Length: 322
Image 1 (cartoon, one colour):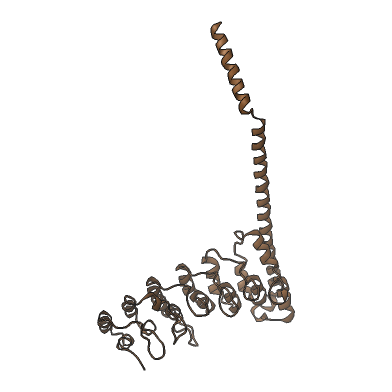
Image 2 (image 1 turned 120 degrees about the horizontal axis):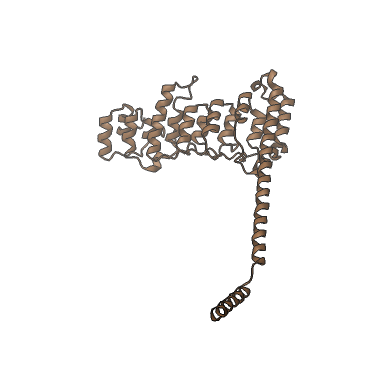
């Protein structure tokens, strides 16, 4: 199998032998014939911890030839390729491995050569616990990657992974809702095309007031992307063509459309209020500047001041002589 003595010891979880080999200069960068590094072969947290003490940063963040992912992503997704979802205890164990890697210098945003991050992958698989763990450790919620250059939010809408999306909208900081995919679609286009009733309900609770006003208006009425459709036109296209309608109960179709329109109106309304506040603030500043300038113009100039001072001193002197 082309395995080194160190790899064999790691696979057997022989901690004593692992320690002896590492202390005596075993090459930690050597992979097995399949292209798996020692960080992929480690089967226990203790074995992983021993290996990480001797691993250079480039190995910790390298994309494995055998797995085509970084050790961090491999540990996050370990076991998820089975037909059944991994158990809570298995997910917690994966997170323990991931914690060791991050503490040792693993880049939380590196996952695949295509740019897909662990956050994007785990959110799309709907593992909210791991999603929150990655966000807590600095995962970039605005990262775009993949064939269609989507964000994690776009991925969760597309895959209808409600639990992970809920965590992202609640826990992530500085979400850029104005980002677009390869075709110019923003999150509202995805919501209009793929959003389920539950996903739309999540966005109805989001506070969009922090978004720049011009960006908000552009988001709501963006006409870029496939066929140059706005989010409203994408919604109409979806309902007319009966696409992805399995995500919306037939009895709730009209309610979904109404709620989506209300969401757009709320985003536009917040943008207009923000613009009015900016205009009002600008007008007040101009009025204050004008009053300050007027006060300066009405005040005596330097020559008048000294002239008055001279006359005052003369009057004081005359009074003293008298």
